Image (tube, rainbow, N blue to C red):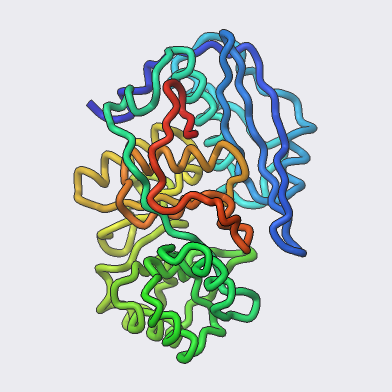
Length: 348
């Protein structure tokens, strides 16, 4: 039986829902805003987190009319109902945001259905929640240096990292960084277009980091006539994130992957996410999890899924406190101990 079939017939009753804005200043020029979607029914609550980027998108969501979700559903029938709804009052700034918002409603529905059934996600899918190995994802400052990384290593010496190489990385910086032996993933961000984190394909940079970090995963390169020959010897280490929203996207990759970064919010629906888990498992494609700078319950969701489906890989699911350096000395360290709630889709 497929993983989705294990949850698709879960029943839920929705009596209404509320939206709660979450906000935190990340830097002098960036405030992260997300929205909790809280579905109510039968004395229980299911919560999901809309990780769409842009304050204005969340402002419009708060001001918009509520969607008709009241009634008795299965998880599958509610998902089909969501197919027919316009979750954005006007077209969003990026098409990917459609999936982010859809995931907020779908994950809230999964949480509510499990809570009303008095069962945990681990119990229903027949998997044990296991300790989650995580990495900390970051850039090395506006002018790249080791200082942001050292702030974390000073407090937590065993931390592993997923880093974003950028054009100002010099051979000297790379040599120092490689000498630390703490880098698991190099996120080249070559698959992003028209975003604040666009990182144009650069054969010099690609060669520099691919050779300096021979054991690190190389994520989301921009493959061009210049960069493809540089990375061809390293194809077994190339992994993908931004293009992956479904099984069809995996099948459309330029060559079969050995591993993938799975961000649940990119998939929109529980069905598409669980289908991709099964597809990759059947083909021996390793997975590691990723997040979207969640501020609320969404962070627990990605930690929970990593615990069930890929606990031992380089999961970009560090507790949110690592995103706000210098880190609080009381933060949990890797691996995270299982914290699945007795019922629902809740972690901690």
